[in-house]
Image 1: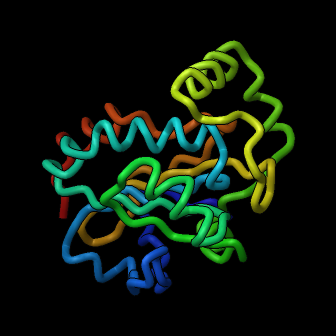
Image 2: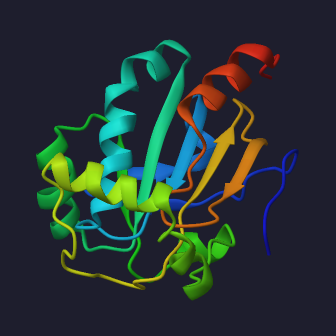
Length: 185
């Protein structure tokens, strides 16, 4: 079942890739951008991670904690995501898809095919030009579609965004505007 704006985000407690316990509702009175991705070697996922990293200082200024969820193993995520991008935000390995199921994040062949539009092809070219290998090792469902949830300090959903294709995430500018325009609780 898809989650909607205004709902309390489902809580979870899970270990991140470094073994730290993450409890969503205990994220020290911070806003959270909870993003679901495919797998560690997905070139389009790496492109989005790169974009988030480039905006991480601005997101920190807005007091937004970043949590990224992948289907991949902890070892793959450390190598292909954490070390490669030198990240300072939380990454969670969820090969059993527990969090995906909790948040209603689904796989779809139809939405995967929608990625072959000109915009999708341009993103693939951009990812490749940045050194993100197309056709990397698949861990989990190849047709997993991304999703993003922007949560306020009380962990209510301000934006629930279920991707329409492999590159469909909440634009960073929308996150910034939503945060700036809302009276966060």
